[in-house]
Length: 248
Length: 391
Picture: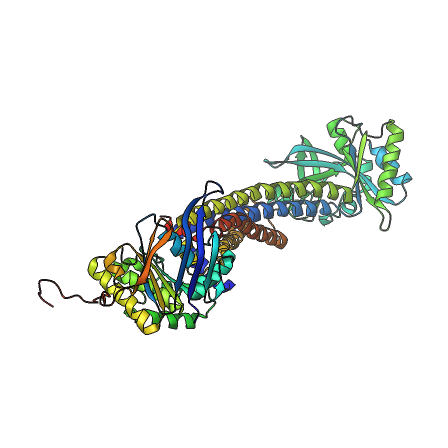
């Protein structure tokens, strides 16, 4: 079976030739359909660059990158936009919702650029918001929502277009621990129930253990890559029992 | 993404910053409004002048001394023209002087015009009551007067002026007739209704002169006014040995000269107003650049979820075009109101020309596109990674 993502010898250099600073040096990575994995590494390791390339926001300087067997390393900006629109759903650390738009309008956003009709967009957006438990918040604006609720809307936006890949950049980085658990539970559920591949970038080992495979990157190279050993996987607890007991 | 979506997005963008959108639009509103109002007043003035010149009478040729090195005209010159120039019906000498006219203690200041019995015919200005001056009146230098409609109203009010004795510069004249009302005038040419007509010979005696002011020549139907003009010119050239001693114009030449002057005036007004429209366009560009900077992150998000460069370009370009088109429409409405107000308050005519409305609206649309394209390109060229990092 063909892998969903296939990076071969991918390097990325910034700056002018000669003075170029390498951010990635010969990365090989294969991700199968339906995987749930974390890319981990210290800051400056190149994991953001890797994520931008996987998400088709950027192109490798050398090497090839195939999504579902299609080489996207040489596509134009607009062609990459079309790939992002259909294949990739982004979830950001800072949510990146449009403040003037309602939850539903935010979730519709990728569908607008796919050219869907208003009715179709509304329906798909509502369904996606129901999946993340935000079906009762359709007309709320981001400012009226908590951080966790905003991230749920962002996940709904990522899954609304039925992508092959969800790319989450430090998705719990701006949330408290308990809300973070809820968000991770949604990723695990979306991965298991919808079969969508989820790639998370994080530096938190605990969050890493909530996915089934960890790719460790350092100085632009993959230094470790493997499935989580049996028994290490942590199911995220949507409603962790309070430590001291109490009114619950 | 289709155009409808672009409009929806653009409207939402403009609605989010209502005050700013309105102020930006105000630049276009004032620009377009000024173009419409000023050009309407200019067009109105030019039509007014044309009407007044046409009211002088068709097939009219006017002879007057040149202003710089002019030579005096005589009554005999009018007779010479009438005799020698083919195609001339009548040549009427006139001598105009402002004077005080008194009737039983009431006095008005008006123009007293000395002329002959053919003036009604040459100026297409008929008598309404009584009779006009006769050849006998002119020949015998009689002290008789015919009143213009305005002069008659000012001096006599509701009373009947016929047979009354009026005093012009202290000399008594008998009123023998009243002219028909010719209609308004006076802004660009002397008011044809505010004058008192007396025999030219009597006027010369009053002023102690033997010259006259100008000669009104009527050309026969079917005769060529240009040929008549040239012939008259030649007669005076021979007599004075100077081609420029006397000016001879046909009505067409006056219309052309006046038309070119008022045309320049209208263009000038339009250009001044056009500059303010240009400034309005710069305002659009300024605010769109600010808007693009402020919404960098939004642009990043849109690009990340699949907006192509042209989708972003369309969104921002449509915003600036909406500003200019809505501003243009409001500006046209206000410009029409403004021209009506100027025309009423300033008592000047104004004519809203549809072609100028179309030009102003088209220019506003062009301003929206021209000044909107650069900020929209800036937005569409943003790198999504950089844009998402922006705060």
